[in-house]
Length: 289
Image (cartoon, rainbow, N blue to C red):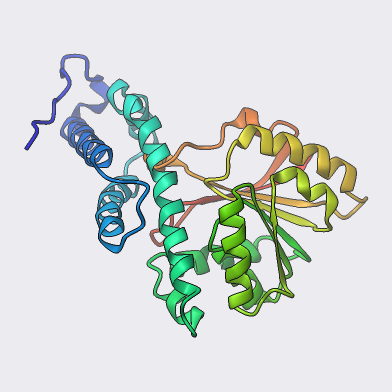
């Protein structure tokens, strides 16, 4: 077993000396998770490989849910060793979810009762709770557009099932879009949910009044820039188009990078709802200025 290097302690800020051991434990766990990730296959969707990947990312997830004050959290995220690991972890986290959701979509398409399989998805309850919170804070949704819907559009399926809201799913990956379309049909919701292969610019060609940006949708800067232009053209007086994006905040930034404030220039923040109950995403609601 490899020995995890521990950084020199001499420069540890006085402010955080009481939490010194905690910081070094986090560094050690991040290095261990990183070493495991680099040894795993992020291209093969077998049950055994996914189980190994799930175990590693569950360990990282536990770090993201640590109860740490904001000052300590900022210091951890600025730590040079941790910062050096984050780009690779972010890429791996996104690849893992793509692989996991593709595998789930393919499995669902072989089953007669797709809802039963979907409800066995470990994150199903978290999705359901997050969507309920979203709906409660954005009750004027008539048609929801979702950028980065992925191969199994759980968000769209639940918005349709729980609230009867017509939805449009957008994904720029042709394979993900094709799988999403097949899944929607398998759930019998093809008249309620439309899947489009493309990026956010395709939203200029269809009707919607609310848009959601997935936490893993990229590139965020371009998405917000194009959305701003589209919404400026589509908005009507006294009927603002609502925008919501899923973000990674606090310690959850160890899992995936946050949306930078400069990306959302031209938008006004209406509300920010932090995750509860083991969820990872902060919901941020915006309007065009």
